[in-house]
Image 1: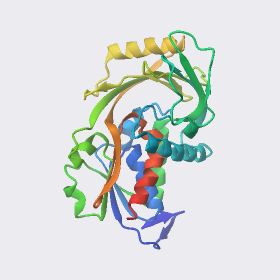
Image 2 (image 1 turned 180 degrees about the vertical axis):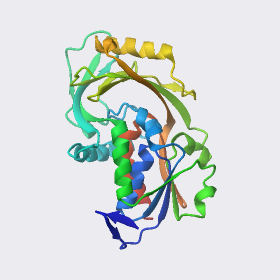
Image 3 (image 1 turned 90 degrees about the vertical axis):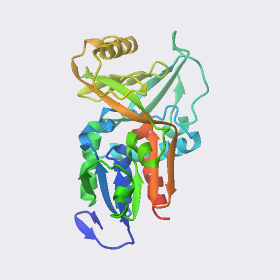
Length: 317
């Protein structure tokens, strides 16, 4: 049973659903399922404030995720939801203009209409061959996860802190399982195509930036969130270490200073590391009483609401 506006709602034909994974993908799916009157429990091996989601820079755009057609649809849904959330207090969601730099000129991305308002900047200079300007949601992931936590508890979602060794461990306690366990999701599904893409970022004090900037080919970015700026980044496939590397921190600050001279003078507040769950193609499907939703890599926040809606639709079957 779900709680709506503080009142217990006993209507509907909801089933018991266990969501494995406390990252943004699992939490978004859990909230959508609860809003459709299912009895939802989230299992997370880590505290919500310590998941890979909270390391993410929070810029909403889908990079090179596949399958492209589904990614466009998921992005459209998510951007629409972030428009709604940006009007609400304490979500950590704001819309900010910015520039996506590319070192070779390529066709406009298939998701351009999903974010809307994209234009080319003809004034770009070497080493860049192309620059795309658009306004996109920018999500302070720490605040956002805290907001999701509050909304989930308000909706009557239960939480358990525990690791899951196998899907069979939870099968007897639920009617349906959602496998959104991030890096562990592949293991639970018997899928060895999921691998870590280690990401390190540096948070520096925000000097009052009003725009974001990304070098898509160098994987460098400066993303302002008010009290801090996320400077990044790295994408090291197959690396499992969660220990910050001082040399990598220096390299990130050097690259970001090339993007935005002077940012290297801002006070370093913290260094964070996360392991993105990479898969060449995102998996979202239902297999019997298990819905698999994993392999989103670095676009989990971007695609979260689109994937959550599809998970909720699959739960009806």
